[in-house]
Image (cartoon, rainbow, N blue to C red; front, side, top):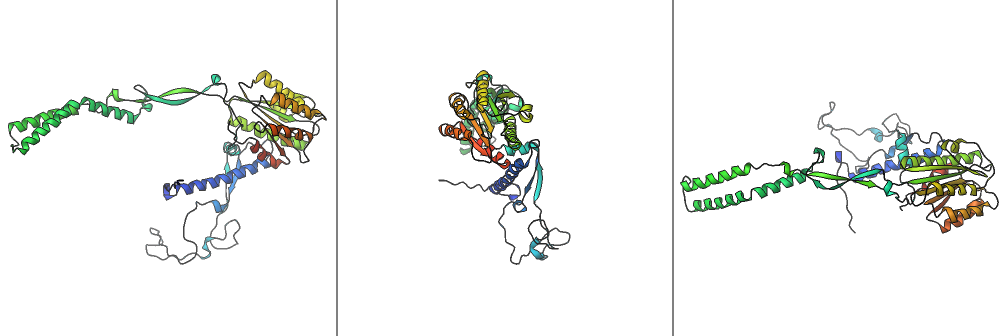
Length: 425
């Protein structure tokens, strides 16, 4: 097994590998801070930016250097107070002391505070949804593709200046000059051989025969120089073609339980979960539709405003939401053309006998049509009957069905990342 060690240096003689490790460490701090910020925020401000703090011990790039012990002599040339050859005494206390952090108080030396900076909403969301995607996303409906990618397809003799391929053009010009000057070059070589023979035979430089040969060589060289260095025929341009990019048409059905057993705290956690999901979809996918379904004893398709802010409540029949979701998929989103996803949030408390109905609807109707079904049970108690029914479904459909429990608000973001971690199709 071969190991390649990259010892290239960046600007200021910094190691590329060290720089990458340094940046990776920064990135970990930012991701950790973003995860903490998501769990501490309300529904309305989750999409804002955030302050990120990096500990002072991680502020500098790692380098090999001498430790703080021993006697050290340092010369600072060019300083207005010292000249070359001056001996500089090491400052007492080693430079630590009065800065912020865990150091002891001191009236000498200098320290560094932790570095805090603000990241924008765009950067915040980028870190929040990094490495996430809709699982098993399959690219469908190539015929409806609306976007195109440019791919290079050989070279052309016509094009705009920005597409000029310099290497190809110079190579073509060189080949043309060789092809058009072959006869003259052969004649020059023959004349030079003849001239060399005369010189070896002792012929005078000013003899008529020598002068004639030199004149013929001069004429041929001038003829060669008249060949243009580059001709319009030599110009080669990169040729690009537009290749349609397969669309990733997908629909996400959000099913939220708003029954009376769902306390306001549980409803808020369910809304935060769906808000994360909604932001993730809006940010990462252009051609995606979201269907919002609220249910108690009956299910209803609602708009975004009603889904998050309506106060309607009632008993609990979970199967009503699954039935409505199945109808919506059948009528508007055929699985042959759409990647269908479902996310369901509930406290798991269901009407007696209805959980078995949910199992039947899921296994016989919904799961064959959907790409991925994610269920979150939001409760800090023991699992409810719906969870136990879904456990059997997950065991038999582990590729297309996933379930997680949320006990507190701090579980929302980790559970969300777990459900929507990258899983290639």
